[in-house]
Length: 317
Image: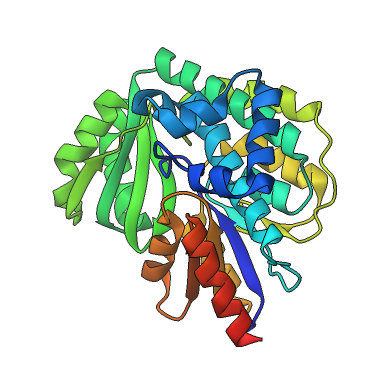
């Protein structure tokens, strides 16, 4: 197994009130990251993230830039404590987390990523307001079973596979009527449970087409540089360093399936096995434990997590 570390970044759903505050309070480098984001957005994102209310932190337009900024602040603090990141595999993120990965790989500037994720969140919220919709986690499903459920429910409205996260966990996305039908027929297709997710709408579905179109225009005006390390696309599950491929895939990503499990399996097949998740809630490390028992995972959500990771790296040198 390669000793290279793959840095991976969480997406929407990992947010919580207070995320990143310990780093803000204890590391001037992290504080600067939050301050830069506040300046870009023209409002105190940091204050909302640290103090709530929870409803606002969970809103799509706040949590998307908020999670990105928190991940970048954690990395800034880790670098100040000696994390070099010299021996790196390709980087990746889950949905929104792909923007964090692109900042980490120096393909997007931090400021551009903050603007893009804020706009992305606002566009997705507007689509959700326009189309009553949501997402449903199918526990015990694989891609074939999830597709069979979608086919059975398609007569009630738009529905499709949104996330292939890990073995036994597939998320479908669509109109409320179609999701209700999917939930009612899930057990007939071997699904143990169908759990509605607390999200604003049908992310990663055709109901996000307007958001994808608007985001495409924003992306056309942003410089995307050749990343220093390959970035794995959610849309293809393949690493790339081509700026125009990245631009196209970011546009498609809003309405296409997120191939997280396939992305991780591809990295494992290439010999990678160590993964670092800087960001709130430690969601991705949980998914990795279901994808492979052979991986070595490190979550950094607090300064004490960062200290433990630093100690492990020092011992392994």
